[in-house]
Length: 407
Image (cartoon, rainbow, N blue to C red; front, side):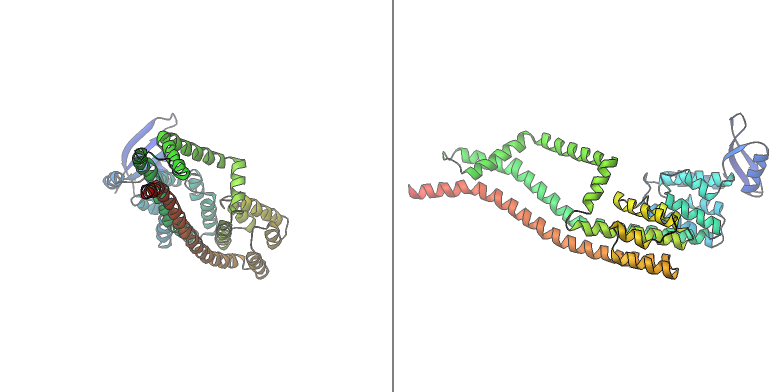
């Protein structure tokens, strides 16, 4: 008979750790609970060595979206194959690469072994498992289709991750160009211009106004470089803090929809999140009102979240979604029409998924266009900047040459 190592607390709160034999882990937990003990952890003795090896593996601290995708996908696969939830979670604790997620899953497994539902165990970790996660799991448990709900959740997370990676990849080159331009400007201003300035001091001529302005700018940069850097950091920090306030967040989200060129990108990202998130929830069996309530909390834009909340209130009153969506001014006529058709034929989830796929492609196209505009603009700006600095330094040389020729 296998041996299990367990930890438990008695009614006085005193911790007990021991090894006992039992046919299964569940049998041991039931026996200990009858004795009035609160079980905090239990695992097979031969697995103890494996557990120590796993914990000694290099783990990262953050919980990334890839960690959550792998967790949802693997758990769905094992449950679909007939593996019990407790056993599946036990296996996953040996494969998770995030230290925070590992501790959370271990605690979730202990809570379930102690009689908690999967949904309630997840809800104890709101910093890791969002309301979207919890609602999908709750629906899956209630319908007896938890593997399907987790698979749909993994699909949704993979779609969100793909869009995020696309945005990041599209911004890498423009960000690199801007960084190079700033480094070049700093080097030229702090090191190169002072060399020219010392040379000009021996010419005994009056420097052109343009050159004097550039040299004065260089002097200010060198004398107060730390001040400028510190000021930029402080301003960035203050702006970031303000954005995280209620008023600041509203203003920032409002500007997203008013910024030329970028406004269409922000709108399409918000629409894709709405359509994808709500479509997945509806197809998994979540009522529309609850789905709208959940989606309204994670769209990443207060303007869109308020519009979705108004749609939710309208649906609660027995009205349709299409009218409030159109009235909000946030959603495009295409989305409104697809929602209207979906409500009429009873395929709202499917129509939202189609809208999500369409806007996923539109996001990719929009990103390509924006990058194609940014790249030449940055290159032209770099050329102008370098040209101004070079001309300002060579003007005195040309002036000196003309004086020498005239003499």
